[in-house]
Length: 199
Length: 199
Image (cartoon, rainbow over all chains, first blue to last red; front, side):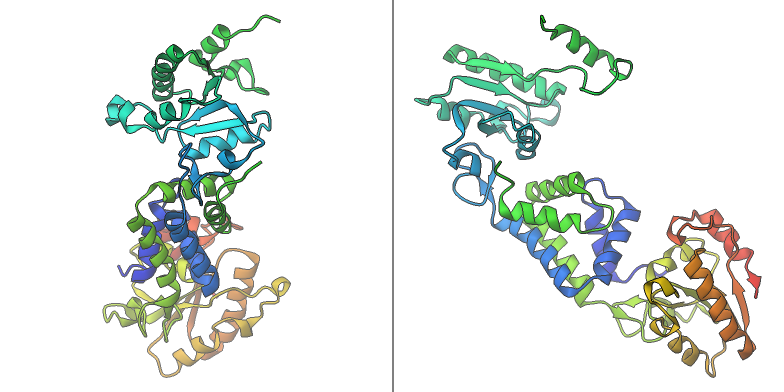
């Protein structure tokens, strides 16, 4: 059976490598690019390359940045006394969308995972400690994911940071707002009970 | 609120332009590209450009091709007495996956749609008629989509081709009406080919 022409088959394979895109979606997208203009294709290709060529990590917080420092670290309006620690650069967005947080960030680029061979040394923890020296930081919010790896990372950082006399906090885990108690899994419900606050 | 760095924001916008990709998927894919190697990004970018630069339409059947003629038209093993007419190049794949069809194809690049201002002249119908002159073709299978536009196109082609003394058939309505050829499973598609009716 003759297959798609080689460049088309190759583009389908490349799209399939991307997360959340299967065979049918990859075909659909590839034919969309094929039908579209040469300019549209060139813009997409250039954007893919630029994200590798024009971006680096912020020298302070390791967030993705197109300059020496990221927009958060450069912004004098942000509260330099609080640092929110996240696993990945994209974890910053959900915190920002709350519009409640005005502090700075620190991106670890991963979480401790013995199964995947990721230990504390593979994470950007040393740069966090260096950053704290002589800084006005009073509180560290640990916003790693509510997973086994994220929890292990938060526990490790808490042990490391508390002796420095800092306030170390962890984001609350519980039942999502607007959800129903019936849909909560046992672990979440347990966390929700443990983290109960007096009213 | 500071946004993503410019190249990252631009890549997210470009991915969002693709069919079936929303904001969250686009972010996820963009960060995947960012985390991946420069080589992976370069391969994706090159594949996007090559699909525009290295592909053209088969001189015979208008299928997408990386040469003067497509693999189907070049294959001497295919039955040149039957032509299966489809709307788009990607509609060939579901027919091929049945492994029941050994004939050739003709791609119309669309369907008659008065609402969108697409008439018979905008489709590759003239090249189909030219192709039939002095050819060994005995049967034309109309495999346009089971939609209003596809049905109208099939009816139009039947009126045009039957006076030429050809057997003109339509794939059976085993495929749910209002759906798309690409979503048909192999068994349904096979039934659809077997049950084709003469018009």
